[in-house]
Image (cartoon, rainbow, N blue to C red; front, side, top):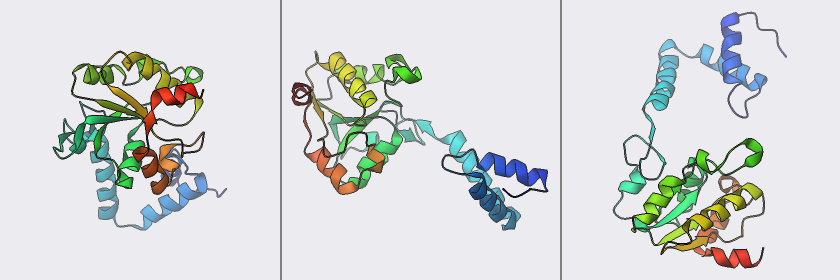
Amino acid sequence: MYTISSKLLEDAVNELARLPGIGRKTALRMALHLLNCTVEEVSTFGATISKMRNEIIYCRICGNISEHEICGICADVRRDHSVACVVEDIRDVMAIEQTGQYQGVYHVLGGIISPMEGIGPQHINIERLIERVAAGSIREIIFALPTTIEGDTTNFFLFKKLNGYPVRLTMIARGISVGDELEHTDEVTLGRSIVNRTPYESFLKHK
């Protein structure tokens, strides 16, 4: 690795290297690029990142990111608000929206149950989902969590919690390979998995 003669540059490289998927060499290239930009360009860049962090909030209905109390999807009267797709995080909302095959709303858990990582049901956005179902406006819940042990565990926990309500419980078709995350699935496969969703009980029978 190169020796950095400036502490200010080294500090910038260290901060950039904290970003996911960014090694020190890439961080150095990014820092040098910023160093070659004008002061105004760097100020705009910094202000934009700061504004994003300070002003983006979470939708009080579904947990999606938003600039307002209610996100654009929940506020859209053209969406089918009787169908809610349960996902792990906002990246999954983006992936599903990209397919153009889904016109319902979402519920973002903000994680999945993972005892190995110390994440239990109380650590994710489950109670709000139960409240939404109990209110009676949702007739179908689609489980669209990762096809992993943790994803299946979370699906089953939600099934046990929601099974007593008059709501249809379905899950996306298993066209997605085991272990895959939605954000890494191609649009066609993900779109078909949403359209061809199946009753959750059918999945349990094959376990």
